[in-house]
Image (cartoon, rainbow, N blue to C red; front, side):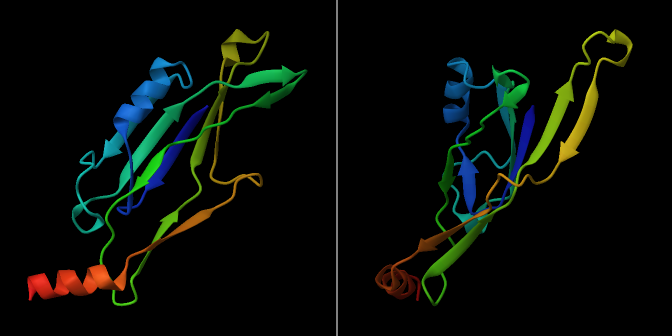
Length: 141
């Protein structure tokens, strides 16, 4: 299964963390496409995409299970007058490749899903202190 997560400029995935998960055989592979600079604030960063390769586990009979957790970090948000920044994390896209047992000529079936009932969308509210905003505004002005 391939999980594709499109990240807004307000969050990033750390490639070193993902490489550690691959090294510990948690995932078969992982890659980040787009903005790799971890130090950039949200204002100066671009969107990125995280791709994680994993396998299904067959725990009970014909039921297949897979769990994917991508460690995300918030970037320094754009400052606003109300002191809040909203980062919207969308549903990931999933790509499944299945081998058909006993039929090598039709060895793969590919399906793409954009949302599953078991997934929950997450909205992260980052609260920036007004005191920090005022001191920043004073230093800039």
